[in-house]
Amino acid sequence: MTTLDADIMVIGSGAGGAVTAATLARAGRSVTVVEEGPWVDPDALEPFSLDEIVAKYRHQGGSAALGTPPVAYTEGRCIGGSTEINSGLWARLPTALANEWRHTHQIEEFHPEALDRYAERIEGDLSVSKVPGEPPASSAALERGATKLHWRSVEFPRVFRYDSSGRGIKQTMARTFIPRAVESGATVLADCRVDRLERRGDRIVAVVCTRQRPDGTQEKLTIRAQDVFVCGGAIQTPALLQRSGIKANIGSGLKLHPTIRVAARFPHPLDHADVPMHRITEFGPSLEIGGSASRRSHIALALSDSSADYGRAMAQWENVSVYYAATHDGVGRVTTLPGLSSPLVTYRLSESAMSRLARGLILVGEALLAAGATELYPSVAGAPVVRRREDLVHWWDAVTRSRSNLMTVHMTSSVRIGEDRTRSGADSFGRIWGLGNLRVNDASLLPDAPGVNPQSTVMTIALRNADHFLADA
Image (cartoon, rainbow, N blue to C red; front, side, top):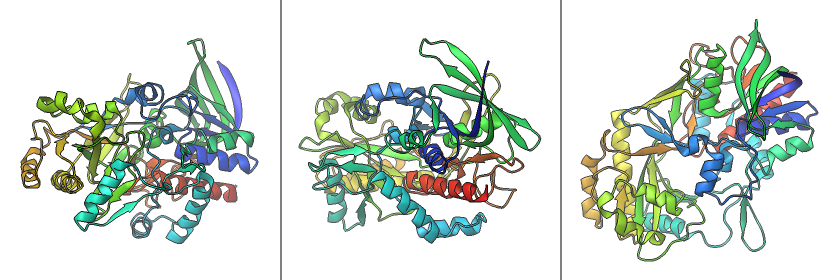
C-alpha cells in the first residue's frame, strides 16, 4: 500500500470539487484532488453521444431511484463530474428561495446579496452568456408556443464561450477550474475511488483509496490529509460518509427534480446538435417546462413508450425533439448496504407531485401543438399519441405511478447545511457536525431542490464555503 501526504484533500472534481480545489490552490494551499472516473479529453467525444455515455456516465447512464414510480437518474463519473455531461444551463438561486432557506434552515451568512457577488465571480470565470444570434429551432419552437399562448418564457444563459463565428464551447470543469487548480499546484488523481475515511476522535486522519492503473491492475493508496472536502455529489457523498461510519442526518432528505418527457414531431427537420435553452416559467416555481438533449439515441429512448408508433416516428427522427415538464416535490434516501459498491437510492413522490406532472405534460403538449408540432409521444406506457389539443385531456388518466417513465439529472439535499443539528448534516459552511476537519461542498448541501438548474447554486455555495475556510484558517 502506498501512503501519500496532503494538506487538503478534495474528493470529487465536479462543480463543487473543482471550485473548491481551484480556490484553495490559488490561495497557496497544497491540494490533492481524487476522482473515481477517468480523465477524458473534453474534445475527444461528441456531446450526448453513446461513446460519451460509456466513457463519462456512472453505470453508463443506467441508475435509478427506486420507488413507485422509479426515477431514472444520471451522474457524471469523470474529471469534471456532471458538468461534462449536462446542458450547461445557468440559473441563479432565486432571491426568495435564498431567504426562505436562510430562515427555515438557520443558515448563517446566506444573504442573497452576498450570494449574488459569489455568483458573479463564477460567471466571469465561466463566460456565462446567452447564445449569440438565433437559437436552435427546437428552442425557438418552445418560445413560439409560449408566445402564442401568452405564457411567460425565458432564455437561460449557459456556461459557453462563443467565438466570432458564434461557435460555442461548453466551459466544463475539465476545461476551467480543474486546469486552474493544476496551474496553481494542485495534484489530480483520476481513476481513484475513495473506499472510506479513517477517523480518530473528532478528526479524519486518512483517506483510503483504490486506484486503477493504466494496465488494468489496482493499487491501494492511503492519503493522510489535514483537511478533507467531500464533493462527490448528492448520491456519492452520503454513500462515502455512511461507509465511513458518519451517519447522523446523512443520506436522508434527498431531493430530485422528477421529470416527465414528451417527444414532439414537427413537419420539418430540427437541429439536434444543441439543447433548447428556453424555458416556460408561467407555472413556476413548482413546475418548469423545457427541452432536453435530442440526439437519435435520446429520441429513441423517449419514443420507447409508444411502441405501436415507434417505427414510423423513428423513420422521421430528424423532425423530432424531446421536451419535458419537471417539478421538485417528493423526498428520498441514500443508503449504503453491506457488500454492495453502489448505494441504494429510493424516492417517494406525493400524489400532488404526480398530479402536477400530469398537468405539466398536458401544458407542454399545448405549447408544442401551438408551436406547430404534428404529433406528441409522451413517456407514459400506453398513453395515446396526440395530434389535437382537445385530445390532451386523455393524458390525465394515463399518468399513473405504474405507467409513468420519469427521470432526472438534478439530485440535491442529502446532507443539508444549517445550524439546526436535528435536521442538518453539516453546519452553515459545510463542516460535518462533530468533525473538525471534514467538510462537504457539493449539491448534497442544498437544503432543498431549487426548482431550477442547480449548477449555479452549487458553485456559488462552494466558492462561499471555500472562502470561509480560508478566512477561518
